[in-house]
Amino acid sequence: MSRFWSQVARDLTPYVPGEQPKIANLIKLNTNEHPCPPSPKVVAAIRAELGDDGARLRLYPDPNADLLKAAIASRYAVTPQQVFVGNGSDEVLAHIFMALLKHELPILFPDITYSFYPVYCGLYDVEHRVVPLAEDFSINPEDYCGRPNGGIIIANPNAPTGRLLPLAAIEQIAAANPDSVVVIDEAYIDFGGESAVPLVAQHDNLLVVHTLSKSRSLAGLRIGYAIGHPGLIEALERVKNSFNSYPLDRLAIAGATAAIEDQEYFERCCRQVVATREQLVAELATLGFEVLPSAANFIFARHPRRDAAELAKTLRERNIIVRHFKLPRIDQFLRITIGSSEECATLSSALTDILS
Ligand SMILES: *Cc1c(COP(=O)(O)O)cnc(C)c1O
Image 1 (cartoon, rainbow, N blue to C red):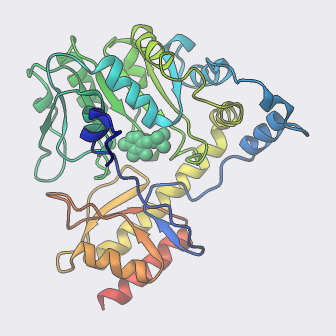
Image 2 (image 1 turned 180 degrees about the vertical axis):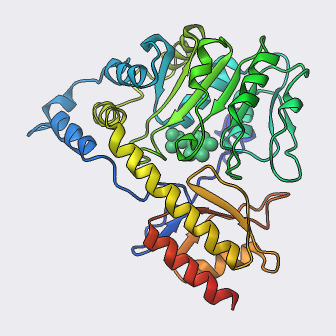
C-alpha cells in the first residue's frame, strides 16, 4: 500500500487466478484449459488477419465485433442485437454486475461458486447474500424463488463443484423473478449440460454467459459473450462504451469467429474431454475418492483419509498441478481439470502410488 492509493484500491479484495507456472513439462490440471489445440481454422483465420506484414494491426478493430456477433447469433439462432461480446467472460461478467446487478436489493448466489462474483460485488459495491448449497453441493431452485433480490447469478455447471442444474430449474428461477436479472454463467455447459440460451426468447430477464476459454480451447485469446434480450444487451453496450471501446482485438475477432463456425471440430474435442473425464472418475473411485457428479471439464473430488492440501502438494512434487481452495466446506476437495488421456493416466498412476 502507498499513500497514493484511492479508497477504492484500498478496499479491494482482488480475485486470485490459478497459477500459470513458467516451468516446462508440468502436467497442468489447475485452470480448466482444454487439452486440445483450437481448431486449425482459428489459426488460419488469425494468420489471414495478420497478413504478411501485419499492416492491418495499424488500424483499430471493429468496436462492435459485428463479424463475431453474427457468427454467435447464427450458431444460437438469435439476433446480433441479443449478443454482447467482451474480452473474456470475466469482462462480460464485470459489465453485467455494473449494468444489471447493482440495485437497492442484494443479489443472490450460492455460497460455493465462482469466486470472482464476490470480487465484482466489492469492486462495484453491489450487495449480496450467499445461498448455501445443499449438503450434496446441489442447488435447490426453491431457494431462489419468493425471495426479493436485486438479481441472481448462478454458474451452471457450478464451479468448482461441476454439478449441473437441469434446464427446468433455470426456467423456474427465471419465471419466479420477473423483476430481476437472472444470469446463468455457462462457462462449462458444452461438456454435458443443456444451454439455457433457448429460454431467453421467453424470459426477458434471463442472460446467459459463455466463454471461448474452456470448450473452444481459446483461454489465451480472451473472448466471452452474453446472450439475452436486446434491452439487457443495450445496458452492457453502454457500460462497455464507457470503459473500453475496443475490448476485442483484430486477431481475437478473427479467431473467435472461426472457432464458433467450426462446430464439428468443437464437438469432437468436447466429446474427447467427456470420455477422458468418465475414465478418470472411474479410476479415482477405485482409489477411494468421492467424486461429485461432473458435467464440466473438471472434477471435484475428496479422499476420505487424505488431506487435500497435502495431496495437492505431493502431486506438485511430481510435477502435476491441481487446484485446491482453502475455503470453508470445500477445503478437503481437489479440483482437477480434465487434461489429455495421457495426462490423466499419469495423474491416476501418481495417485495410486501416493495412496499405496
Ligand atoms: C473460467 C470461468 C470464467 C471466465 O472465463 P474467461 O472467459 O476466461 O474470462 C467465467 N466463469 C466461470 C464459472 C469460469 O469457470
